[in-house]
Image (cartoon, rainbow, N blue to C red; front, side, top):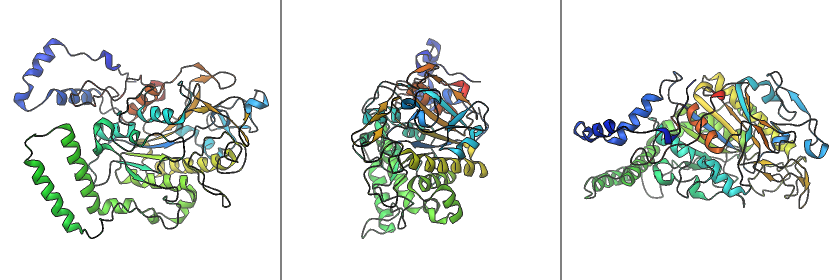
Length: 466
């Protein structure tokens, strides 16, 4: 099992620095040298080509007590109304609302000791996106870093975000819809500006391939050629910002001309029976969409786990998992903001995703992450309108699968009320470092222009999960 030093332990000797002084004569810069060393020290660990990731955000914060970390011996006001059921892993039990995932426990691992200190949605989501407890305003997201360090050669966007955050608890757009200080070349392609723009809608189609009004593809090609000529004449020469803009424009131009991308973004090409297996709801269809994109070469797909609405409900927000009982639906009620509605849909969609990836030979090369920004309070309380659980970051759970993650593993332990971590606490830094490692990316890889000032992650990899 590999171990990875924190960034503070990486040092350059005097000899290495002197060697670096002559590197330019052979056309290699110090950042390139450092990057090459990082790659050499952390490559070939899996024998699999560059990996992809489907990162599912349970926006609002899933209750750990009613899903992955049940406490059947606790008082009723803590344990809630649901029973735990056996899984395929001896001794590992989960909520009865997740029977399909229970049968597949040998394909995934659960962390029961996620922890941080922030109980405010927007800040906690920004922390999750950046993979650190104190992110800077221009920190790139996990997805942006992955696409920076593992670019794709396919004529398709390397990073796609399905379903834009909505509601009063959303993080700022710049935390996930830009590339942060890496530049717009590493920003995701957003699909799902509104709640109706998803593959479960009958009239859904991706409009990114449509050229602007009155502008033909031929005219766009001429504009691109002129833009490249102007850039080549720039007196300032190349800079990281210059290169990022150039790459962003190239990706945009390639997208309009890529038949492969147009095919990948057409969910209607999937068999109706498979679409039914995922579930004809926004989450199910977005996860099927994500699988299509990964299969076509997209490196990172983020999915907001909005489970949709019942037939008689009106749209309120995408915060499916923020189950205070404040939105006219109690946490244990069968409605858009309740567990009996949302958790079975998630169980169906995620279980089908794991099996679909496995059947296509993609599970070993695709990391699947299912996590919210925090958990919920141990004690059930009366919200503004219904029964619910409030925000709780001190102890919560996450599920990870594929890409070499050890199936059937349960890491960390909570106390008797799932309120505080009893053993093996996992910070956002450690969680993100482990995700990088699962994707065969050295967490200590430099992401700043100089190649070593900023690292992908400062966390410690959880070897027990790999």
